[in-house]
Image 1 (cartoon, protein in one colour):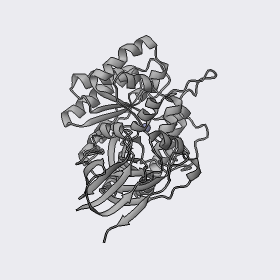
Image 2 (cartoon, protein in one colour):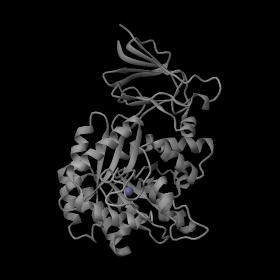
Image 3 (tube, protein in one colour):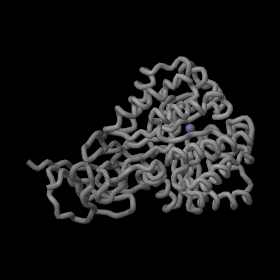
Image 4 (tube, helix red, strand yellow):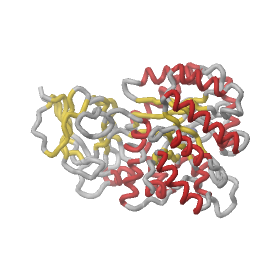
Length: 425
Ligand SMILES: [Zn+2]
């Protein structure tokens, strides 16, 4: 007998009326009218069941620090970085841990069960690194937290950054970060990419750099990142975050760049909420959107994920850990309103970032972890439209969060908007 069976679910790939059986924390079978018995049964009533949301780009050391020590008056990236510089010396480990844990609770309630967070390693005390490693350990039963050693002040520009980054990796941080566009010159930026990719290759680690987060069409560090990924055989292990300069690049150059990124197996992570608010700030009108070329990269066979990046911190005063909000903004900014394109936007906050993070046993096949979200929606497009309630969130086959369905009248007529529990005794 199985521990649990979910009956009559719709799946993100469009299949309807599907049962999902769960045994020992993993999916044991998926199919129509499964002839299995289970200790507990949930009738999904045709609602969407998906693997959990995954955020490929976040800053958990800054989360929920809005207003500390003051708010960002201009709302710009540079004032945000300056503000973070003011906040860093007064951070305490207790406060960092408390804020991060609070955010992880928000995340779970929204079905977000895996987060890749950058952690600034430019503070020689590595206070935030220690705090987030502790958070990673504490949340592990319910959320996968992957950490990136992020040199906010530049790996070459900040004299102790490279040594700190190596210390952070030795302490247990998972991924090598970088910020080539923040180095002093284009040449230094390129050199930082080489050094960091070589270090990652030596250590067998993944790479995720803040790359070309500017409106400068000549910021071409993504080319260098793809070149070294290819040269060092890092295919499938490297991501370029933001890549906003690509929005403003010359089209001919981009036609050569896209196949290079594809061949190097480099993934792209756009951060739509942040890109649309921070980019184009030097423009009058027309004002650029700034988000990278998402549909074009997808068409070229490049993996593209959407990240949340910030929630209530020096750079962004809004956000709630809702990856459907992130995907919805990406959909609008990228004008991805076709049916297939909208489904790709859903994938960009689920399957694609799971692949970028290298999450183990993620998905809806037999053998995958029974980490599932039951949404108050009939399909992925309705989920995006309504930012639907996450009725149930399951981790390893156990319900860890429940939210009631609020807007029953917003659904298509005739679709029930509820679920049923039944326990066999
Ligand atoms: Zn970031």
